[in-house]
Image 1 (cartoon, each protein chain N blue to C red):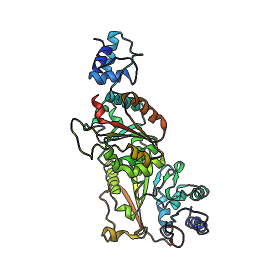
Image 2: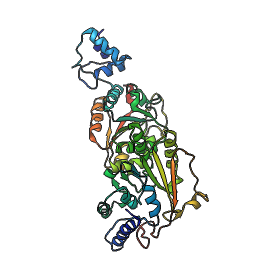
Image 3: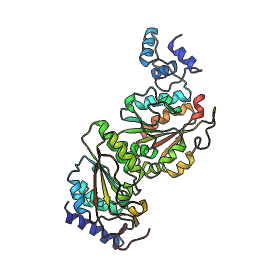
Length: 221
Length: 199
C-alpha cells in the first residue's frame, strides 16, 4: 500500500482536500519520521505535492502546531508542551524541542511571561489545557493581554467529559465570559477540524492577542 | 536629567493637576530623585524598564522626552505608561508588570542579547507571591534582571509592614539576582498633587 493510501486508511477517510503539511501529517498518523516518509514517497515515485488530507480534530491541531512552528519566533510554553501529560501534549510531539518551553504550574506567571516575550518579538503559544486553569491567569489576561495587545496566542481547552467526568473544576467553558472580560481580544472556538489550521494561521498573522478554544472531547473523533 | 529638572517637571504636572487641567489620576514622584538617578547610571538605552503607576521620573531618566511624557499624562495614560521605543512599561495593577518583565528577561537570554531588565516594585509588591515566583525563576535560569525595591512604607495609605506582620522587608533567597532597595518619603499623597483625591 502506498503512503497516501496508508494515510487515508489511518485517517478513516478519503484524502481529497488539503490542510496542513502532508509529510508531517503522514509521519504523525503512521508513526514514522518525516525523513522516512519522504524516503518512502521517493521510492514510490509518488507525487504528493497536490495531495489533500482530511484530518480529524486532533490531527488538525497537530498540523496547525507544525505550521505555526515554522515561524522561528514562535515558542510554545506551559505545562505539558515538552513533557507528556495533557490531551494537548499529544499535538506537540512533532514541534522542535527548541521551541517548546516547559513551565512550572504558575498560570499568571506564564501569561505574563508570554506578554513579556512578545514585547521582544517572540510569539508565544501559551498553553492552558483547561479554562479553569486559565482563570488563575485572569488578571494578566484582562488587564494586560487585552489592553497591551501583544502578539500572543493563547491555547485553552474545555476539558473532556468522557470516558471520565473530572468534575466542574475541569470542564468549564468560559468563552462567552471572557469575551465580555476581554473585549479587545479575538476569542475563537474551534468547533470542528476544518477550522483549526486556518484559525491558527489567522492568529499568527493577527499581530495582536488571540484566544483559541479547543474541546478535548473532540479529540476522539 | 538632573535632580532639579526632575523636580521641576513633576512640580509642573502637579500645578496642572491642581489647576484642573488633568482630569485623570496621577501618582507623582518625590523624595527619590537621588536614589533613582543613581540607579539609572547603570541603565542603558537598550535596557528594559518595568514599573507601576508611578513612573514619571523613570520615564524621564530612561530618555523619554519631557514633552512626550507630558502629552501622555495629559491623555490620561500616567497610570499605565508605555513607551515601546524607550522600552519602558508601567501598569496600574499591583505587581502587573512583574511576570511581564520576567518574560522579557527570558527573551533576552534566549536571543543572546546584551540587554538587561530593570524591574521596579514597591514595598507591597515585594511581599507578593508573583514577585516570589518571578525572582525564583529568574534566579534559577540566570536571567538578566535587577529588582529595585522602592520602599516608602505604604501601599496607598496602608502600612505595608503592619498588614504583613513584619518589622522589616524580608528578602527573597535569590543571591543571583541583584536587588537594590531604597527608602524614601514623598511630599505628595499616593495619588494627586496636594490634598488626597478620592477616586
